[in-house]
Length: 135
Figure 1 (spheres, rainbow, N blue to C red):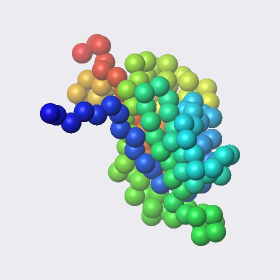
Figure 2 (tube, one colour):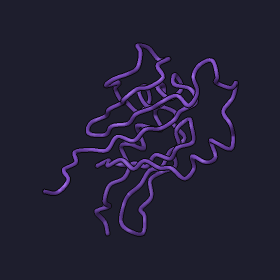
Figure 3 (cartoon, one colour):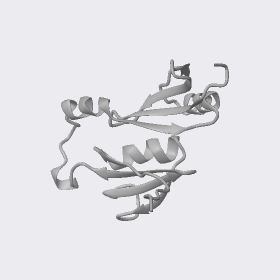
Figure 4 (cartoon, rainbow, N blue to C red):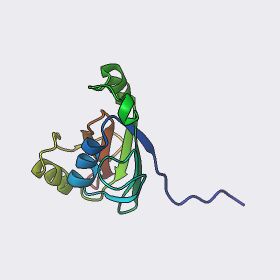
């Protein structure tokens, strides 16, 4: 019998949960499915938007957290990207720009995917993509 999977739910380590929730929940529109404690200062949350799931976990316990993120750690997040299926990439671009997200207009990759890239507060890349119909 083959392995049956339904979805994937990546876990990202974040520096500041309130900042991450402001981005994922308040800007992108994810809802909190579960959390380690109520409120924005939880150490772990599971988020959902449609069929997309994402978990966030604080990198540091509150008493151990440095005043600012480690620039080397943030730079290392450059090689991590989350790709979301997004049927209307142009509408996503307008949605994000209306909310003040720094996003460049979508482009079509050589392999035919229309893609919109943004970066979250911790330096993780997010790509909203869908097959481009004008190939």
